[in-house]
Image (cartoon, rainbow, N blue to C red):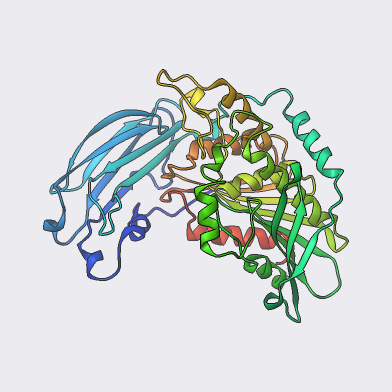
Length: 436
């Protein structure tokens, strides 16, 4: 089952992200784009027509009358480029699909916001996304590799360090900073919260997007207040609740460009510890005697969306998961002419040849390979103008999921989350936790 955003003007929300408040906002150009089909979905042989409209009441405020555009197939192959005259009436750009894929319309304005950021715009449409398959098959020993890691983790006693968080504990819930041991001597650091009353509770796990930052106990507490126990884990083995200087130091040194650390080796990849920690945290919360044994939901966005997929694959107790614009999808997409998802794992030389070690290692950390064995219910979203986690990479994962699943196409959204999907996610999580 799939749902789409209502037909609406593209980029209104995107523009608002760039625009400053007050008088400065009124002076910035506004470009709006529509497609000729409500769901922005097409079949092979059909043509998408984008309409681009410059909507500023004072045309003299535009820095230039003309902008350039690119039609970029699967964000890998520019099939057309040209200029658009903003002083003319509505402009159109069209493309006829010949195969399943994604067409990205990129509008390069050359303009900047008052704080110096580029002011560019995008539009997207998809052709038969249900037919997109992963760029590479799983390695023959994919399951054996991860089973070995799970066996190592299962042999470790949990021995959780639970330190009460006083200002987040009251007569209804109890909240802790939690530390768990994980693979290769590393630690998992996060928060655990649960209702204070004795009983059996559904379990919720929260995983996080890319970046180097601390996490607060607030989200775990919100689920505990509603009647679930929750574990919220940092993607990194770092302290939470520290001054910003602490995270800046890590970001600029030990964790600088962490997604590419060890990417040439399945044993050295930075994501080995991250994925192992997802399994470890999931096993911990469902090993507790106060788990109800029926409900275990995982939620994450971007890098967290990828971790949610991995957790649902590695942890047999996961009953449902939500992945918003998930990263770590279809690392081998470029092998079939498509854009891979973040973090663009594999390096290619000037002749378009992949680094063989990186390509091979990436297969053990590709959500397309984890997805193939997931039995939990799935709710996944993609953004048709997402240039970070390309919608083609997300569909490559979705299409190999064997169980009950739903895709939500955010046709006017980039790398973010729409209000419509937020509501759908909240309702889905509440229902799958048994809280409705």
